[in-house]
Amino acid sequence: MVTRAAHIAASYFSHAAHHQISALGNGLINDTFLVTTAQESFVLQRINTQVFPDPAGMMENLIRLNQHLRQKSSSEVRLKIPQLIKTLNHHNYAVDPQKNVWRALEFIDNTVSKELISNLEEAKQLGFA
Image 1 (cartoon, one colour):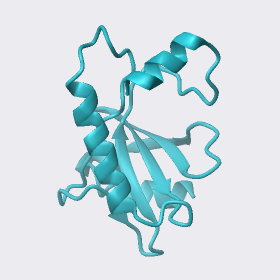
Image 2 (cartoon, rainbow, N blue to C red):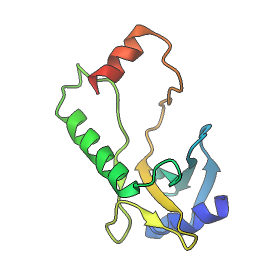
Image 3 (cartoon, one colour):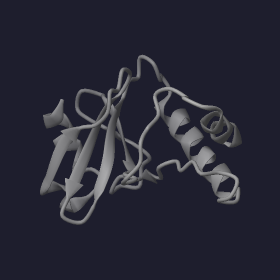
Image 4 (spheres, rainbow, N blue to C red):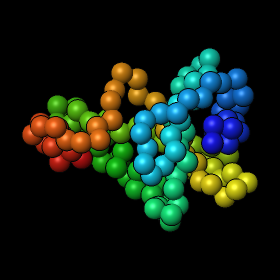
């Protein structure tokens, strides 16, 4: 899967040919990778279309969620949703020769992705979204 991710990374950045790719997280549904280039890092994710059969709709929801959160003040929301990165052809996602759908997202350094809510404050932050 890393080889496919390496190939698809070039759909997002011309300089992604010189990169390092590593698995990221414990994805049970999607395959997620951290792509690191000399200029930046980003998250590359293969979307499981068995679980998400409408990737275009899913991406539109992500865009709307980001727009909604940007309208809230930073004192209300301490949750940051990674920004979508468009392909070099200005698409919201890429499709590889095997028909796998891939998206790229901003990598937010020094953060954690919660798999479980552990306290009331975390639940409140999710409620603001």
